[in-house]
Image (cartoon, rainbow, N blue to C red):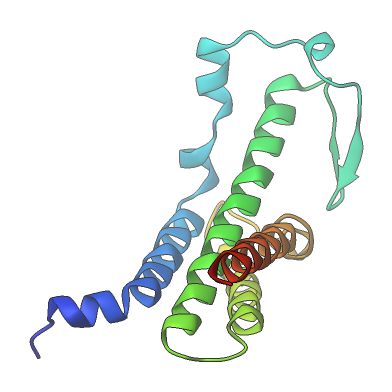
Length: 164
């Protein structure tokens, strides 16, 4: 089957959604030891407990504390990556449903992002050296999904006002 430029244009958001899912799958399939950012930070940044906000809390049974500064910073970077990744995936899914004429595209795209977040954590639980945490689905992933939905609604409303 010959793929034409028109087909790619008509399916661009869906193709990008699948590509994003592929990126997330590969990232989740990579053992933590290969993704550990702490050695990089230790080589290039000097951090001490005093440099960080003095807030500690328990996340999925583990203490997140500034007394371990490199681990503390890595925790927030990883959770921010969850927010951004699943927000982007949700936006791509919403646009993919919209280009296919599937309504309500915002709901379908958000549910797709959430469904993939569940799958992603399950997949991680099967990878040696990784763990799947449902709390990641319900906090950073869902935050990314909700922020993407909000962004979509704001931009959509702006475009509707502009077109009137």
